[in-house]
Every structure is written in C-alpha cells, then in structure tokens.
Image (cartoon, rainbow, N blue to C red; front, side, top):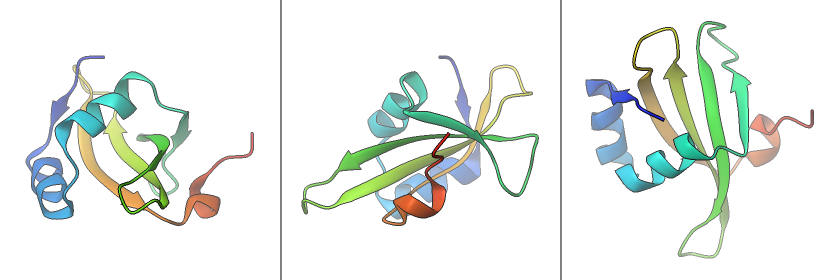
Length: 88
C-alpha cells in the first residue's frame, strides 16, 4: 500500500521509538481496520506485536484514506489491547 507520512506522524514515531518498518508492516497487513472513534473520516490500521520485553502491545496507525495517497496522521503502541480491539 502506498502512503505518505505527515510531519506529525514522523515526529511522533521518532518520539515514541516506532520504526518505519513496523508502520509499513501494519499498513501492509493489518490484523484489523476500524473507524477512528473520534473522526469517522479516518481509519485505524492495527496489529498486535510481542516486543523485546515479552509484552504484547497493539500498534495503531491512524490514516486519512480520503487523501491520495493515504496520509498517516499518527502511530502509537498501547498495552490496552482490550480497549481498542474490535470483537467483530
């Protein structure tokens, strides 16, 4: 999938220590794609990963898909998998 990073996404990924390769992996093969809870014009691509500390985390990539190519707004990881994981 072609996409571009917003400046904000680049800054947040750097600040949060999220490598571009991880974001690319989520964008290529997300386990789930859900509507952003706060903005229905954006989607969240998300996948679960086990990190070096052995803990499972959810990597969420917020995407504006109405742009061409789609624009990644931000990316983050969270341990609150149950909060964001869609059972559907």
